Length: 153
Image (tube, rainbow, N blue to C red; front, side):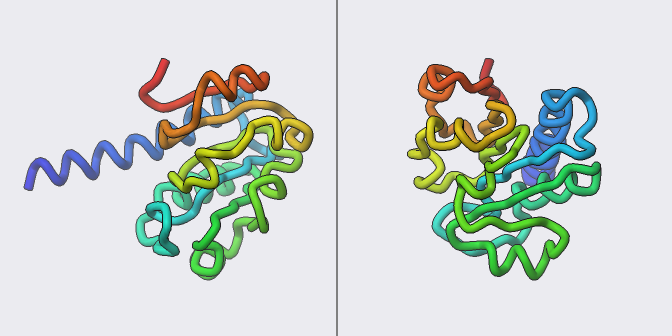
């Protein structure tokens, strides 16, 4: 039982750390900043949003004053019902358009294979947080992105 409680505590700290890191990277204040969130489902290949870390992070940033655009290949209808105050996009490029930071928060293959150059032309700033540690850091950095990941240097 203690093990499960510790797992829950780690998961909650990871959400908080993602919000804190995004806020730091946005200069300490997210007010008026656009945040693109890639992922809404609890896990890839699912539309299940129950206890979704991605949506918890997105909503926390929205409540802090950011404009948050979420894209997920399957979970948008469920997310829209549960989090109506978030903005939803039809694809990753639309979510990232004008974004000051991009957060990769669900491990969809579509996001792992996303070419960072496809987003470069549409974002306001090339900053990405890889919350799932599945993006290729060298590829993103080579494309001129400021790449950050939880648990990686």
